[in-house]
Amino acid sequence: MIEQPALHLGPWQILDILAVAAILYQLYRLTRGTAAIRIFLGILAIYLVYQIVDALQMRMLAEVLGQFIGVGVIALLIVFQQELRQFLLLIGNRQLLSGAPTWVQRMLGRTAVQMDRNEAWEALREGLEECRKRGLGALLVFKRDADPMPVVTGTRAVDAKISSGLMVALFEKASPLHDGAACIEGDRLTWAGGILPVTGRIDLPSQFGTRHRAALGISEQTDAVALVLSEETGTYSLAKEGRITSRIEGAKLVERLEEALASH
Image: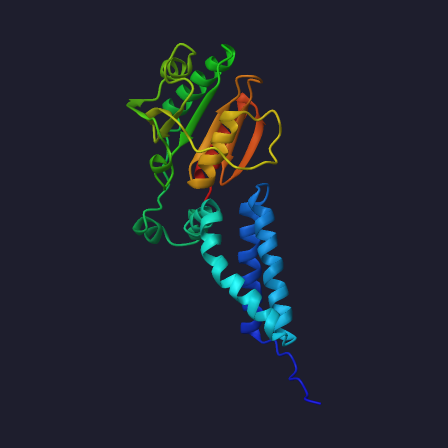
């Protein structure tokens, strides 16, 4: 009888396990609530079975599963194209560099975009509140590090300073741009009428309409923060990094926006 060597867990082995666990958790978090989670769990189950049969020296079955996994890598790149994009965005996200010195973040182009805390914020709030009183919906994208333009279509250049009247004019139902999203960078509105990518999640509440799904979609594919004013309920929602917070009161809107844009 051949004696098997005892399993040795040193610092590097423990770090290896923790790193794999962290990667799997992030992949699960990105695919949670989508149809891709079932594919992800299926591939994970096949890989675990492969490891077991390989350890038991079941050569034929291990060879079959190994070939399946090898060929499946290309299929995974196609099936999980959007999730892999989100994962790579997560790696380069500013929150991973929040502890770095300011000069390092500046060198990597990760200095935060700040809005004027006085005139621009007040004009934005007044314009959205007027839209809410008129029963209008609105969708705003706040640019941070990554430019959302590559995943947005149908935009019309505006490049105007934020004002309450501009907000109402954009989202008035008679406006040809009212169904699209508008982008805010600093204290200026840069474009409007944009068609955003819609999230593929299937676990969203039924009251979330196209604007909410588009806000989640742009927050999944870029680091932008998206603001939704619901036409039906008159409440605000904020989407950031694939998560959405709803039922935000108008009195707390500016505070919540500042927190979302300032946090790394």
